Image (cartoon, rainbow, N blue to C red; front, top):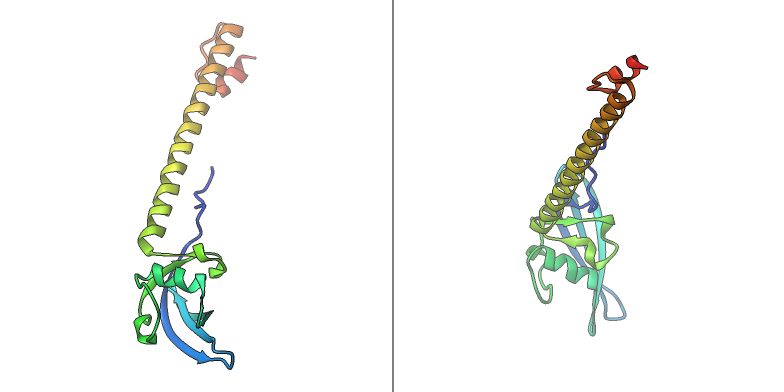
Length: 152
């Protein structure tokens, strides 16, 4: 039996700490410490760069995922917020809201259920075809493959 495996491997996370570290070249390193909701004791780190004429796309993805827009000025804006992440947040699209991650999971589940129902229907049709073949071959009504084998 096939097991459900989502195509989107999003993980729900909570931001625990944020720090800003100014660099000599005018850029700022923003370090975001977060933990997975199901493993709050393990902290993960995501680092982003911001500068005078540069804005990290990944940071903008994270800010969008937690419902903030624009420039990040205060670390307290992020602490305690929830978001979903996939693949460690290495790309802009790896951050999303929990609602979006849930919708993706729900869509995957519906597609899986539909595919499973179709596979079950095909299997039932194959079994019926095999029973009919056995009946035509042997003249014995075979309602299962086991009965068909006994007839041979």
